Amino acid sequence: MCYIKLVKYIFSAIFKQEIGGYSVLCPELGVASQGKTIKEAENNIHEAVELYINDMSKNDLESYARSLNEVPMVKTFEVSHV
Image 1 (cartoon, rainbow, N blue to C red):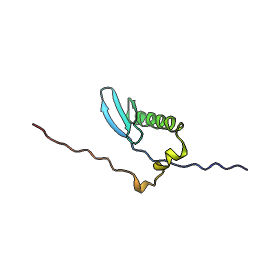
Image 2: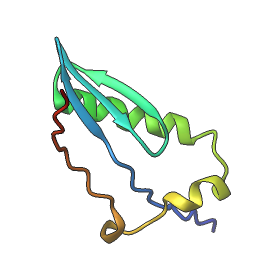
Image 3: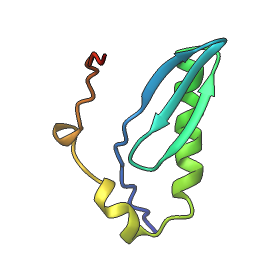
Image 4: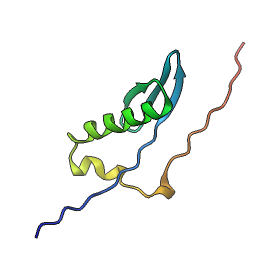
């Protein structure tokens, strides 16, 4: 019997509302996508990242195997300039 070990990788998704929908970026990989709704954009970035990592080696993916406790926090802030 042959067993395949699945490894889960955790990536970030940053969404931005655009005219006509949402753009989304996975900053760890530099992969971007879009969708008319947040859910569609989320599904599209998930698919784009899956396709992108298919060409990566296990060694390249090692740094992305982390627990949910290690997920980066993304926060926005405002800066004024004259």
